Amino acid sequence: METTALILLWIFGVDFAGILLTEIVHQIRAWKYSFAGKHVVITGGSSGLGLEMAKQIASESAKVTIIARNQTQLEKAKDEITSYCQSKGLMTPLVEIEQADICNREEIQKAINASAQTNGAVDVIICNAGMAKTGYAFGQTIQDYDDSVRINYMGTVNTLFGVVPRMIQRNHGEIYLVGSTCSMLSYIGYCAYSPSKYAVKGLADGLRMELQRCNIRVGCIYPPNMDTPCLKKENETKPEEGLYVEKHLESLFSSADIARKAIRHIKRGEPQIYCDLDAWAVSMINGSIGPHNNIFVSILFAAPAILFTSAFRWILLGIYRMKQFVGPEKRKKWVAGSSNSEIEDRVFASLLHVGWNHFD
Image: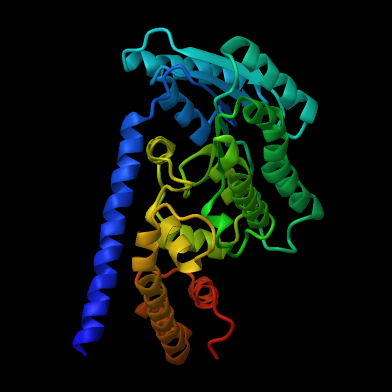
């Protein structure tokens, strides 16, 4: 018994020491990192997360190029970035705009070439442009599935083909792809969107392995739901279950806060950039042979996370069965604030089967 206790104590001691050491390394990287003078290209930079990242990075004296399809929005975004930088004391920020559709290889290549002529070689590329179209799997069209892959995945590939070969030649660069929590865990209504974001994560993981020998850093950003025009449009076709989960089980963040968190993790040199607790928890539960920001944290929390989610699902099962037992009239009173118990039943049933084959 004493021997077992000593072994466990030694394991936890080594693990905590590893956590501390890794955090120190990340923090030193953050202190040393600077955007100043770097040419940062951001696709989808005229609104939402892309615009907020452009503001904050430009305010650190970086040379920023934002790329989007709408020229009017680009010009408005440039004015917003300039005003933000001036409010931070940088009176003449270096901001360029390029109009291009990431789905058009020639257009995106031309835009990147033009940005390089103005601001120099691209040091950092943030592939943020994308779209989310939601709906029940077969309530959506084949075109919806095709658009998701064409824009979210192939649009990212098109952009990288315009940047990465030159980074390889220079033996230097940073690549950040914007995924989603849906890159790790799908849900009702996301059958067209989620696979395209799984593909983005897979691309990031593969590139990271290939390009580390070229001194090119690759990261994947996992933003949560943000109060953006994109989310409002997404909610127009989102199934009831998704809206319920979004209202009762998820938090809504501002794009400015998420941009701040993403930039902080970029500076720390982390390959997996989790912008909220949900994304981090999902990554712990899923587990993978992919890189971990802190392997010691993963070792320490992976098992408890799995145990917690197992207990959580059993609790959900108990509630679900009780709701079935008491009947529809009584459970309307039993669930505070419930306006549609059928939607709740479907949400409970779907959550019970995340990562499990059967409960019955």
